[in-house]
Image 1: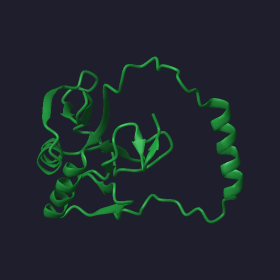
Image 2: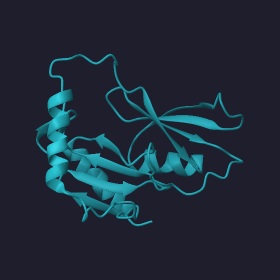
Image 3: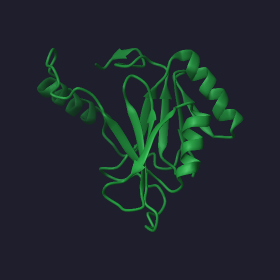
Length: 171
């Protein structure tokens, strides 16, 4: 699957109306200085077809250490496993042996992409690792790399600090 598959052409959209609606929502809902009721993202769980292939990709290509593997409490025979992605955050996976999950698809309520912040030096090292391992990627704005994992999930490595995106404070 190419990197551009799943992106939608926006040729029929009234962009000035979209921006006006965005500004209305921003004015109505942005709440500066309000503390979240959450303390952080415990983990994000994705699905995979092959546990070992997933471990090799995330640990060997991206350098995210595998931290634990346990049985999935909700599906007998399934493995729930975790990678450290820094700052106390985990990326988790499930396999579901015996289920035909079909290929990855971006759908409403599904995953578009997962953006993981890395230090600029690590970003360069990971870009080289992706190249070395033959993983196709698309670089954007000199700070983001987009690629697909072995099961097709779109991953972004972004060298901007947490809480920032392309020089804009978002947190």
